[in-house]
Image 1: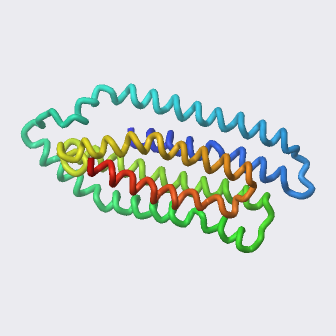
Image 2: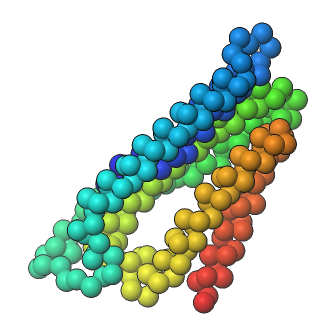
Image 3: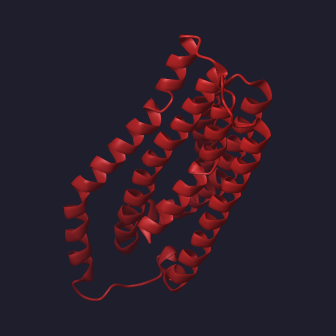
Length: 224
């Protein structure tokens, strides 16, 4: 389930990459690819990738529905099960830490090529292609974060620790509901602003600002 969920999230992030890549190539000098054809083909691929991701979310969610009751924490494990799960969780901890650190570093450094290109005055076509690279790097980082976080969360869920401690579950639920609305909105705003303004070299600022806003709002939700 963790791998499938992470793959579907990655598909959503990668869905604009073909569009950006085709548009970037069409803007290059001596390019034989018409921009209208590039945009049309890119949008078609984007919709196909999103459709595949949504289908994956639905199928995976349906398979996991039988374990939905675990989220409430209203269960008792059989004798010895908690000890076995705790032992597996401790064995998984180094792997979890490595994937989380790598994923976070990738998400932080993803904008370095685009910033460098903007500082050096690279043409718009190069900036568009580097934006596609940015999304690819983010997709790799998010895959690591989601896959590792889901497995780690399953251990906490069975042991009723961390975010699945009864006192923490209500606050976590509020943040997740808000995040499900917030981040798709930020992504849509980023792409619209970048395409309309053509300033790919500065539009990346949306991401750190959005992260700060998200953290602040989540902190307010936790206090309610």
